[in-house]
Amino acid sequence: ALISVEGLSNSQLDELIWLVQKSNLEFLIYDQLGIVTSQNLFKRFPESNWLAIQTARINDSQRLLKRFFDLALVIPSLLLLSPLYLAIALAIMINSRGGVFYTQKRIGRDGKLFTFPKFRTMKPGSDEIRLEILGRPDENMTERYRNDPRITKVGRVLRRFSLDELPQL
Image 1 (cartoon, rainbow, N blue to C red):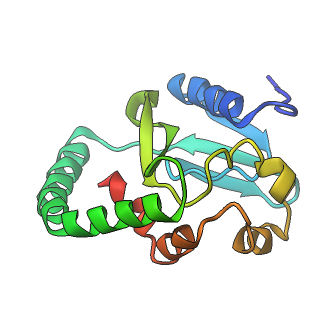
Image 2: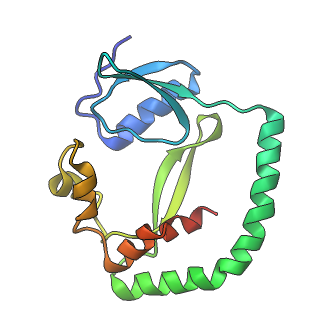
Image 3: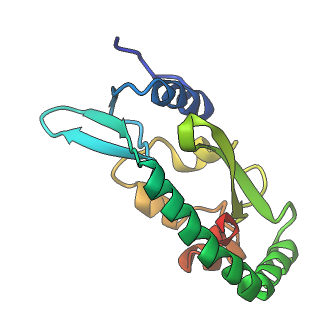
């Protein structure tokens, strides 16, 4: 079935992708959406604007090995990096009003939604004005993101060194 996604919000689009992934079906999305996700395998059809999205699969032994590796690295890292976490949190609180963390819902294992945390790099309420500031995705998107006025001073530093990703540990 061909489904139009025009006019869907990001959360509605996430929900649609989640439902299709949960059913273990392959599906096509017309590629003018600027969709990016690390959970899927993409196959582009160069002769058209279509994009196939296939769910990545790992077996139980790979999952167990990954979990062991994650824990073996994360626990010591959290202990060693806790002073950095505190410094970043203080810098965010001093630089702008609002919470220290930004969270989004993402699609996880077995199609379950989970909360994805990051250090906040933008001013509060930035999600609501994204379209006004950046417009629709196109070939100039990278340049517009680079000059995005919603990003705080501390946020620019955190993004430059990918420190905003640390809470994912």
